[in-house]
Length: 485
Image (spheres, rainbow, N blue to C red):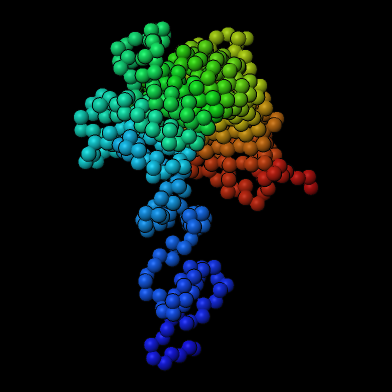
């Protein structure tokens, strides 16, 4: 143990040069030793490090601890801003003032949806939806988000122009498009398009057009309150791969996306890989245009659609489509047309139906016909999926994975009549289907269970079959349940 006589001189204590964490301390000690006096100045040790080295240090800190580091000094604040790539904005003035770009110059993912809505002060009511959440105003009546609760179209254009100039490497963007005054007048899109002149062409949708022209690396876009005119503006995004369009949400938005907008989009954004249409009013023509032009489209999600009859036939033009997802659709297609005109999606692998009304047998028959090549079939909380409706899926002969959840009308006999026909079935998942009983499992169905690679069987809370299968080898990598003695 070291002992000192009198007042110790800390500058004369030897510091081992091996540990890197003492690098700044060593440099400071040696600088003080050259002066012959102990360090009493309190200088910033990190000032001896370059910005590049300090950036490397801050990147090693967990992301949840990086924000407090930005409060150390102005230099750390600036360097921390360079590390931020994703941000959600709640105040539109932060964008228009230019502080967003100066504070965070390397943004690649920006969410502007909260900033597009003027949050009422002292509002304690928060309403949430799958696609959006917002605070309610005390003056809200018919709509949760009123026109006066949104920023103006001019503010949107100014903010997007500033963003496009300051973030040329932007890859993902989410925002609410503000409906223009010409849409309020009731004129159709085609009428507006024919009457556009050069002066008002440059004045409308300036913000979205600037994003499309300046942010050439934009790959993912989420556009709320979308209309045909919005799609005209973003059709210049040539490298767009993931697109999420929200047109109509009951109580929130009342915009409309028709075949005109979908056709314009298809001819402009030909590199789309994933497309989600929510509350759209298209039909066969719009889906057909998407399929013919977007050759790389692999995933299509349709939510709560308002499409006209016959749109299912347009799916056959999506030659590379691998996943089709229908969510919250109150109707599928009441009049899909003759079977011989429906076509076939030969590359389709997955069909998912979530919270959909599947009572219409004609539309379900047409859907299963177009999706006859699927390998994975998923039903989740679908209304009207009884034995008769589920029997229509037997036309999908190549199913390897079946998932049923919340299908209370389907019985054990209805399940057995279909799955025994699928010779390639390998995985089965049955959750919360109260009319499927353990006591009704036949030897033929039990034999099928023994051949499955994966089995998750919990049709109700009283099911004991899953517990009784433990240790038998049933449902594990094709192990045989019945073995010859």
